[in-house]
Length: 265
Image (cartoon, rainbow, N blue to C red; front, side, top):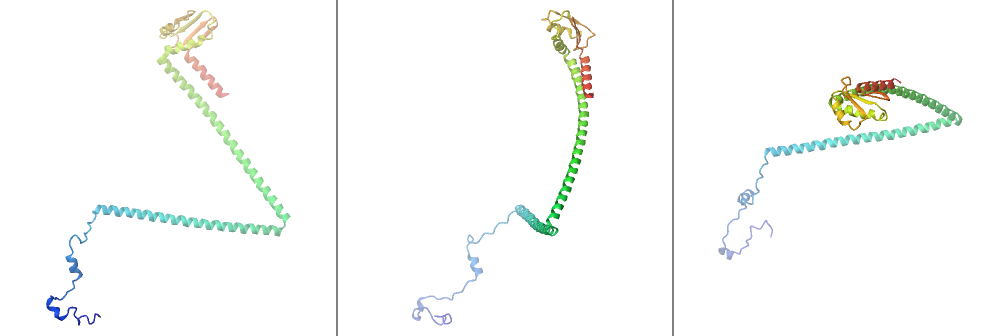
């Protein structure tokens, strides 16, 4: 049964029509169907994201895109440079090969002996040039070494002078703070070499005398005398072997003169 004659035929026999209620069917539009859909079936409208989150997301995406674009540009630039270098290298190889071939042909044309002679001359000239350059370099190095030696000598003198002055400051400071201990240590050191002598007399500063008298009482053959003529921290020893001046500043002056004399030599 075709659609054209569908309306001409009834699906219900005429004798059964009174048993059925027949109404004309009306097709609904899509808009009506959509309006009748339950609320739960209708797609919920997506809540728009807060503007700040959208802006932050957009900025992040934009930064990532910018970074990717920058990296792509750098990659393209590097690729281009590598390609150029490769082309230059290949071109250089071709030129070298051409030059080598041309040189071989020229040598064959000129003749083996003439080419050999020319090579020897070129080699000799190159060797002479290298010798000259080497001699110049050695001369320059020698001059620099002499300058460095002079500088080191001057620096050594300066440092030695500074060291002597520092030693003086240390001596003065130690004498000011610990003159008694300094005098005792100096006296013991000087007495080591003359303990077999007789008539040993140790003169010390009056302020240092009590401390040395207490610490040298175990040496009965030594006579200890106070004297204002002796500087603090210093000693003067007389014995049958002669006199020993233990004045610290006098010893410092001798040390300074010795150092300066060695630097002049």
